Length: 267
Image (cartoon, rainbow, N blue to C red; front, side):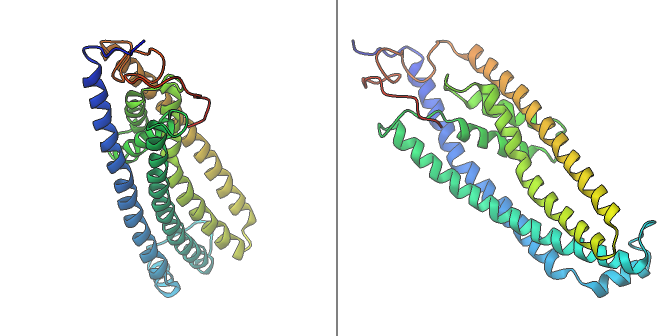
């Protein structure tokens, strides 16, 4: 039987295609710009970190500590600044790698959509879009993970993956740059404290950072999942038709005459 196209199907499919085109451009561009800014900032910090300058700042009281002596504080501050700069450079490089991976992943999805393999689920694509929304709005909104999860969940149009899962993934993805940078900052503090034989301080810092990262991941992932659920609910309510891709499901992909294919492949 030939598949039929509903009244609102083509418009819905056209809207989704336009949204995917925006995502295809926005995600790698924003990731690239972020990586560029963070990478150059980190390189500048790593190069500018100078022990003599830090010693002068300690002597003038610009850097103070009730735990370390002035000499020890210089060592800890220098190691922290140097490792923080390296961490920002690594974060920038990983952002560029993420942009390249996103472009490659989208090419594979488009190839699947054209018939080369199982239909794509768009799970990671929509999660990445939500993660970018979270990262961009996190400087302005306290509950940015919910907004990013909402964006990813509303964009998601595949029944094989729930919008709640997409929202949770978007929240976790947004934490990755912070986690990488913070781990390098922690490494700098630990290296500096171990140089002055402050093992207790090093262990305390590691414990605080790990707990903070765990809380941040739970907060971002949890609110991202909530946002994804709400986005999915709004998407379903806005749909005039059970089928939002552009046609009824009758013997294959929506809105085309292709036969059913194996959809067991993962994202």
